Length: 115
Image 1 (cartoon, rainbow, N blue to C red):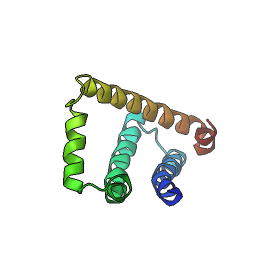
Image 2 (cartoon, rainbow, N blue to C red):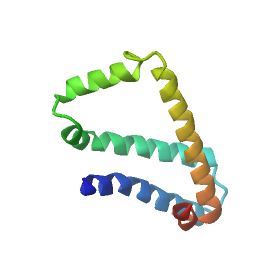
Image 3 (tube, one colour):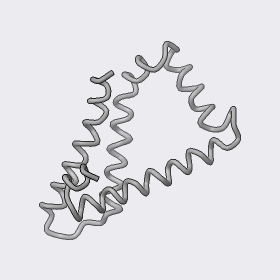
Image 4 (cartoon, rainbow, N blue to C red):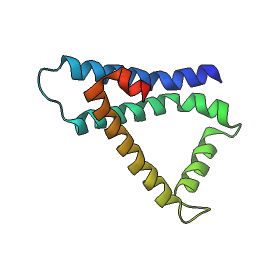
């Protein structure tokens, strides 16, 4: 479990270091929304790369059945409020990404890690 955690956190750490380098080495002002969008894209790709490992750890079901049941729950098969819940999560995640990129731009990766 600690290896899986280390691998999952390494993408976020690498993203923060790369954003810090990007802000420090760029000669012009970068748009925070652009940097946050690229960070979210990297997060999505990293999640897709870790899906096979998470299937083996999370469940003994076949991956197709696991994804089908997960998608049904995600879209509100058992609770009508589920689509609203994941939309609220998306808004919170985007807000957190924007604030983290803003803090990274102002204070650097060390300030982001400490906060």
